Length: 156
Image (tube, rainbow, N blue to C red; front, side):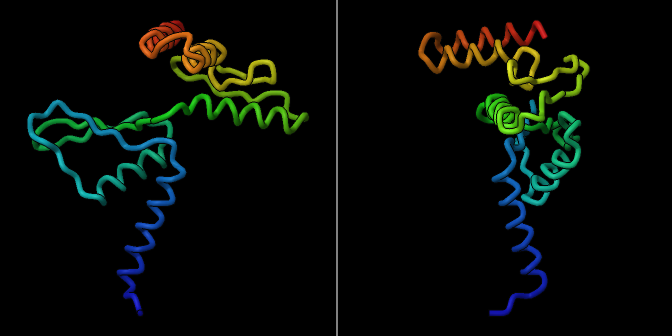
């Protein structure tokens, strides 16, 4: 079977999106207060996703539509902070020449250096990890974990 150039490009683009989606730790989140449901093409969704891929420092976008504004951002499902902390631990344990990994500060957080004694990407990483471990051990419920996590986040 011979595929046209257009079919090849569409298949390659679809395959590239599938591969990128599997590797991406987030999905696109679109929220609005519109009474009218918003519907966007697959190409638009792919383009918005790619924009956020290319501009990781941008937290989100606002789409202006006929029916009002739609906010577009990244939705990190799962526990990405724990996954990052596990990778930090791997790097620091596997390569003794590396003594720390410094994460730049933001408008909300100061610069933070993860070390073998504190292998967390966030300054309050030990506190977040303790809450997560307590919940996994069944010592606290999800409501209490959320309350504690918010309290830690508000201190940062």
